[in-house]
Image 1 (spheres, rainbow, N blue to C red):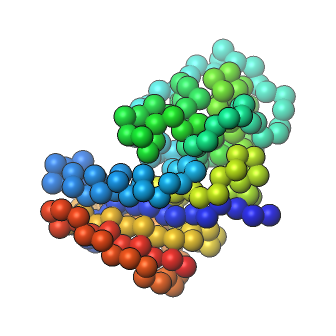
Image 2 (cartoon, helix red, strand yellow):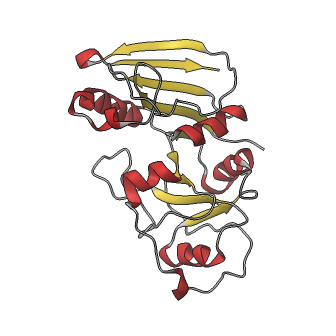
Length: 231
């Protein structure tokens, strides 16, 4: 079965880190602007992030009171309606993200109005699935808690939602899952002219060797460089 074409699109420091305080510094603003500009230019059908990234960017630590919900009896994937053309894919194994609507609301048109699709494991709290249904969020159940079936989930994204091009936008651990399973087709890196601090995470956590072909180099203001590579 076919899956979407995956572009890992990330902002990083010169020393290859994708987490850390530098991401929020005023000096990194030019790199952040370039990152969002390129995000929009790819004209993807959606973007995918892990739980931590989605929480920091969108859900902001909200979580529903699941005691108000019954466990869903269905063990099937759930497609919440049709007519959506842009998607936000949350890799959320245990169902820890507290969405409050079926779509992202963001001032950046590259993220705004993206219909939310949760990728969860078989061990997710079934009351959480009932909650997602109640607010119109779609979900795909893919594997057990420790080993999500990422490739199968991608195939379902294409099958159910028609997603042909997907931007993978972190974090480091989720990027590593995709890379180790040979699910990264292209790499788009925006490099901020700064060095990260000790303990920050790399582009691919526990990544494996992968050969790439250089496609393009672009420069932006204030020393920002963007690189593109393909498998």
